[in-house]
View 1 (tube, rainbow, N blue to C red):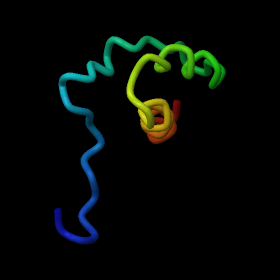
View 2: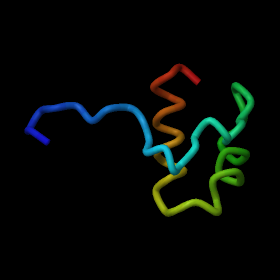
View 3: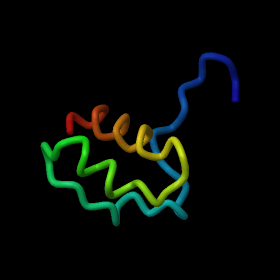
Length: 55
């Protein structure tokens, strides 16, 4: 990746973000419970993606 190049805002297919169903405006605790079994840092990634989409 070149310096200054933005990372694409998508996750590898193996993560299946579509299957994580979080109601719009749900408290952060709900999201944390849902992504808890996933790898470290994933909760932060999901939160970042939700914020970037205005969620």
